[in-house]
Amino acid sequence: MALFVCKNCGFGSASWYGKCPDCGKWNTLTERPDFGPHSGPSAGKKESLKKISVTPLKKIKTQAKSRIKTGLFEFDRVLGGGFVPGEVILLTGEPGIGKSTLILQSLKNIRTLYISGEESGEQVKNRADRLGVDLNRFLFSSDLQVEGIIESAREMKDEIDIIVIDSVQTIYSKEIEGATASISQLKEVTKLLVNFAKRNNVTIILIGHITKEGEIAGPKSLEHFVDCVLNFEGEKVSNYRLIRASKNRFGGTDEIGIFEMTGKGLKEISNPLVFLEEKKSLEPGKAIVGVTEGQRPLFFEIQTLAVPTVLPVPRRVVKGFDYNKVLLLLAVVRKNLNLTLDNFDIYVNVVGGVSIKSTSADLGLIAALISSFKNIPLSPSTLFIGEVGLLGEIRKTYFEEKIISEGKRLGFRKIFSSKNLNSVKDLKKVI
Ligand code: TYD
Ligand code: MG
Image (spheres, rainbow, N blue to C red):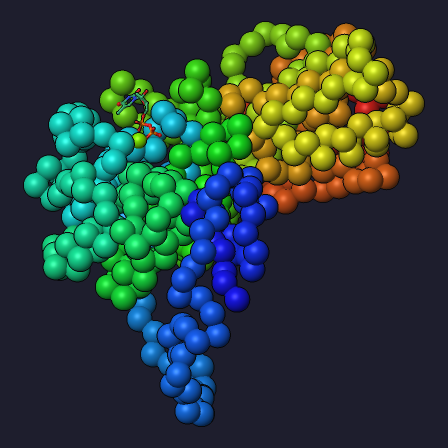
């Protein structure tokens, strides 16, 4: 029996295909000659029976790992207090969003080996210089073979604390045939680097590009190899950037860090109103919601547009909000408010290019929809906080009191939440 393996994605099959059933690429399946009943590492020599050794967990020695602080409070908070030695982090985001800038800034004073396949040494130096990086501690290379990187890193492991790979899509393993950035290459280089990080207690940051259109498949397939996955998001047209962890073995995943991209790099933002523009009135279709990200109250503007459709199946275009949640809330509206939006195209957006993960924005989304449908504006000093259940009930959300008191402090005069509304039906009194 032969095994055919896809050079692009690593898919294995007993029979050959012209088109890989997994990744859909043509002519990428090749036969693995070493595969068969008489090959493989254990061929010919059977391993003898080995009993397992068992230790009470209590007796296992642990080392309190001291964190490497980045000095950027917003970033450290998302990491869970800084980088942990031996930790492997995958930092993803769209090209141009500011990943390299964030990393250069946060490693200002840390002994770093920076491998760049994206930019030349001169470009990196110019930028690092501008951002105030200690250039003596920063080692640079544009050599991209992972075996070479690891061998050199092993030799200088006492001189470096962190290795940055910018980006993981540009490095390759000499052992794998697939093109750079193919899934089999990405997996192999990541495995080798994770192994190195763990054995040598060196932190490794892998930068991975993703695009909204779907190239997500690459870095996504690496998520389970690494300790921490960070997403850097925002719109290039707006200057605000948000970082959050979608996986974190050494910290939580509910904190976010907010930055503004300025001429002098990223600036940390602590103002909870940063995503709201100062306005005397709102247009119909907009509502302001209060949510918490981690422990911290934040306020966002939700925009919706409901317009009569010309299509047999109306459009639902959603940005910054969970698509299925919007469909669910539309069903709740239809049932409880007698408002049929079936003949309307619906567009939903969150101002600032960020996405809201918190469920406490549900109530505000419905208020915005009604506002658009009725063409009646809501006031910019009205705030909505609340999760909406399947039956239209309004649920109390985490840290509701905290959002309310912060909202009051910041000048919201009417605050609607589970405290004064029981069901979405009660929105009739509001709008
Ligand atoms: P970059 O970090 O190169 O993005 P990525 O690594 O995610 O591809 O940053 C991209 C943009 O940030 C670039 O268009 C220029 C802008 N920028 C600033 O506005 N100010 C700065 O100080 C720096 C360093 C970059
Ligand atoms: Mg970059």
